[in-house]
Image 1: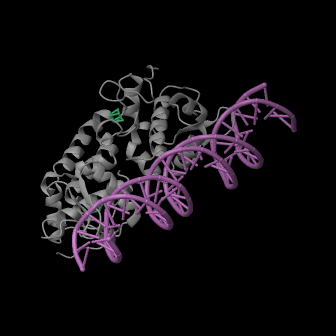
Image 2: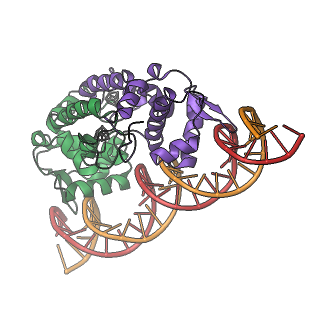
Image 3: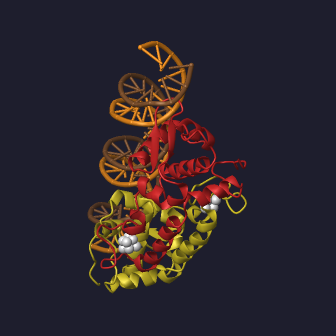
Length: 153
Length: 153
DNA sequence: TATATTAAAGACAATATACTCTTTTATATC
DNA sequence: GATATAAAAGAGTATATTGTCTTTAATATA
Ligand code: SF4
Ligand code: SF4
């Protein structure tokens, strides 16, 4: 469905959304902390975060007290925004099932009529889910962000 | 979404479904013909077809006049059957979005509540689509199986 | 200004997926 | 039975993705 990089990006941004409401004078979170907390390979996560920063989703700051932070408030950033930055939205638009070049309504593959309905639902689902609401559920302990449940902070 | 092998498997089985109603005294289709017609790498397709045969979806026959054929009538074989044989059904059951081990209703990831609804719809969609109906649409020219439209046969 | 901390950058390594080649085996047909 | 055709089997190659390492640059703070 999604690349490993994309999954890590989703986890990391949700983690940042969780932090953003909570640390008063500490606006940035070091990448090492995120990687540690979520069990994501540190060096790999750095590259992913660079990409997210290039796409304007994150702010980065070097030096002590540096790290990364969401570029906008968590409730204005959707899971789809994150997916779009890493894997792109092609899976919801053109490259879905049989991935024929130039496919679509005029030149459909055999699954098109069925799939065209579903993919809109999927895209909407990711678009309507913003990082804040997800982060709140994680903080409440209703869902987990990593391999083990995280305790409420 | 699906591996290349899985996509090729779907295309090939639909092609066979298309043939099955049409060739009277020629029950088997050579893999080379399928690969040629659909623009799939021949050697790769052979391996995929071996897997489908091992899983009981296809019958194979060596020698001249040999080839492969569907093991059941096309209207009793679903697209989900083909997907299950190659990529498995994990994406519809356990390994969907964030792919945490042991996840599910009790230990959900942040997308679980949304996704759990969608994945059932997706699985049903592939389960309710059998190869015959798809093949008929291809034969009618309503949909295409390869990079260019196939003409009605 | 010196130091410690952290991101940026890019080369590199490991793994997984996609694809190819060669040899062998079965069997229909002549 | 000899021959030709096509699948079976398995080793090998190529490419993409995932993950690691090292060096450099920025900057907050002491
Ligand atoms: S024809 Fe439709 S369903 Fe098929 S791959 Fe193209 S956009 Fe997707
Ligand atoms: S928690 Fe649910 S949605 Fe998330 S990966 Fe597991 S099964 Fe899929």
